[in-house]
Image (cartoon, rainbow, N blue to C red; front, top):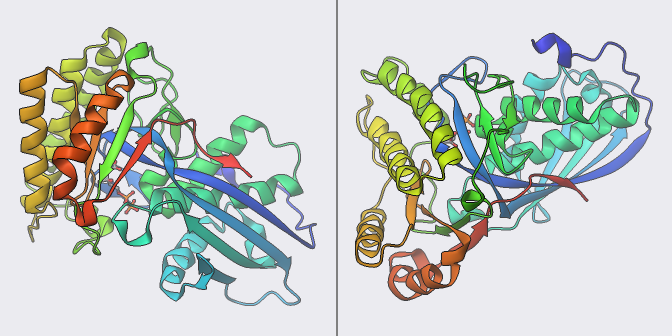
Length: 359
Ligand code: DP6
């Protein structure tokens, strides 16, 4: 499979150049948690691609006078040199070199900016890694203009995955599936694919307000968490359940079964955290305000009949999902009743979007 992403002949013909991509974050409905080497998922996941939370990356490249034994790159975040991003990008370059043989021929300057505060606890690896992968694909395209659009985006997602698993779901919109599933055509462990099944209009333009409960660094990284699924007592059942949930969500999208959507999405979020709490060593990423918010959401739903629901990623922040027609009422509820549970009363309104774009 990977063979098709190794270019046959590619001449590093460009002397220098500059490309910029803006790539969004995404929020999983059925979660990816557990992976095999190299960056292959243990189960299928599906996510909404977001819109307002994104990373903009400019890659400036110049031919090296002499090709050295190491990669040559510098990383800037919001204009400042960022030494602590380097190891992650070094690993990424090592993993993708086979597929982008020209990267040793160039010196790179990677300038990156997030639309959300760096310390917000919002995962920047999905948007950040997909933005770099897309920039590198644009360079490949400059050397080989024959690349089809389909190949371009598939390989961009393939490379993104090698940077961070969930990043492969950020290249395209609005719903993206990653991980081979027998009932999803063209699904692959190697890259994300846009979900082409029937989706009722109700799920178009879905809203996601991210409540920033805790802005600090996570105590346990996703990579460590994924690894704790090896030898986890419930791992096999969990991976099977995720495959079943993909079948269920397919039906939910077709039938526009919003109550089942809520039940599935909230259960996936709590199962993800239950896996963390039952691994060895065990850990908890939710904070007390995460639980406060969950209870307020349940109360609100009970008393108003609203279709507001929550999901979580690997952290304390809460993603609130709701249909567009509830935008006004839910947003009033958030600012009046939930903002006080957030650090500095901060939250970000986002919605489903079409994927990355070149600037
Ligand atoms: C909980 O993609 O951050 O957000 O592949 O190690 O970079 P790595 O992990 P990462 O894991 C994200 C997991 C999650 C669920 C999800 O997005 O599906």
